[in-house]
Image 1 (cartoon, rainbow, N blue to C red):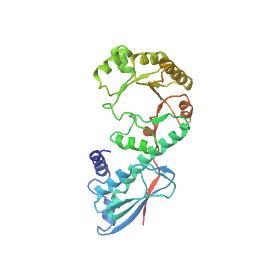
Image 2 (tube, helix red, strand yellow):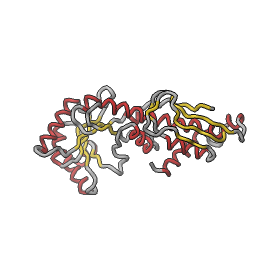
Image 3 (cartoon, rainbow, N blue to C red):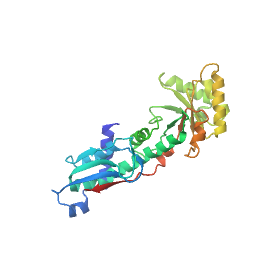
Image 4 (tube, rainbow, N blue to C red):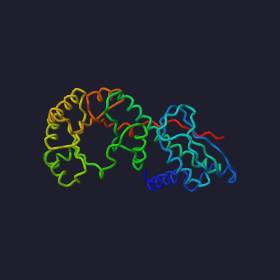
Amino acid sequence: MNDFNLSDIVALALREDVGPGDLTTRSIIPGDLAGRASLKARRFMVLSGLAAARETMRQADPRIIFTPLAADGDRLGPGAEVARLEGPAASILSAERVCLNFLMRLSGVATLTARFVEAVGRAPAAVVDTRKTTPGLRFLEKAAVRHGGGRNHRFALYDGLLIKDNHIAAVGSLARAVELARAAAPHTLKIEVEVDTLDQLAEALAAGAEVVLLDNMSPEELRRAVALTEAFYAPEPRRTRLEASGGVTLETIGAVAETGVDMISVGAVTHSAPAADLGLDWE
């Protein structure tokens, strides 16, 4: 987690919400009044976002003491304490919403990810995220995916090579796209190719793709893709990893995992995660 980025994100959130000052708190709460409060889970959740919550309180007022009582990745039931806050009452109250917004958003991502991981069952397929994240919050949301038991796909365009259909259309063929990518990319970087037919899969295997994304294939098509890939490498073990992607839901991920693919990418864990329910209780 990049502390510089975290500091910037929290500062922006506080400027957005508090701005030049909290009119209500300034009007009601004496500046010298001290207070204590607890952050608590209202419903079951997988916790994520403690670093952002702590940084929010630090920037709001360095005198606030933030004591975590749980860790990112913990599964918490209703009423479980996440952290205790102690310090200037006005500062705690002014930063409350921003602090809760981070925790609710990121714990929501972690909680939904955990549900997808559980729905995979005993199959060895990993649940991975995508780049469909909230602008500016990607590194926090991808951390939340890990806290929920998922894994991260490439972080951005600059740290992973994924040849998609429009790249192939632009250069004329899948084989040509792989050839160009291999010539330009470091030898340590794996080349992933997106395909949506078994014929394209065969072409990707022949071109030497290390990872193939199987886009919007049915479970039956995925099983055939796994069999085709194993046959391509026989009698040696399969070396190309297979990723299923496209419209995967909690209801369908179990069947997708049973096809034998290595990874299942789920954009919903970040773009459609409902907020977790947390609150701040004044003591």
